[in-house]
Amino acid sequence: MVGHSVRVEREIAAAVERVWEVITDLDYAAEVIPAILTIERLEGEGYEPGVRWRETRKMWGREETEEMWVESAEAPTETVIRAESRGTQYVTTYSLEALEHGTRLVCDFSAETPHPGPAQRLGWLLFGRAGMKATRKALEQDLAHIAGAAEHVDEETHGPDGEHA
Image (cartoon, rainbow, N blue to C red):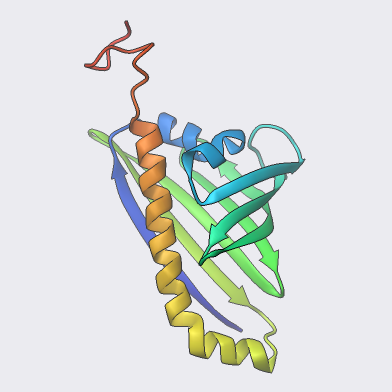
């Protein structure tokens, strides 16, 4: 088996419930994360185990489409998302922890190829470290966009100090 994993985290100035809303609203994801071009629901509604979708992202200068599904969802503290493509299994776990003034959002991402062929072994050897470095940067950007959406104060429903208007 060959593979790599990456962990990124960010403190967000918003309640855990608000951050959970942002990361689990699939129908809004393309508006939150600019790298997501489209999301097409395949199975299920809302956000719960078994919900499947096809996500198209702009990655490394080209469009990539993957089918993804919710493996588990423990609102509002953890969700696990899976995908599989060309023999590689991808797992993304989002963990949310309440802080005194917000939320710590942790994203653990792993990519593993249980039965790699010679070309896949060579690819991981040559490009695995660089690929995971690029993945880390992309995940950090995703978390920044999630933070921006969660921290956003809608001026129509809240005043400048966050109080309801």
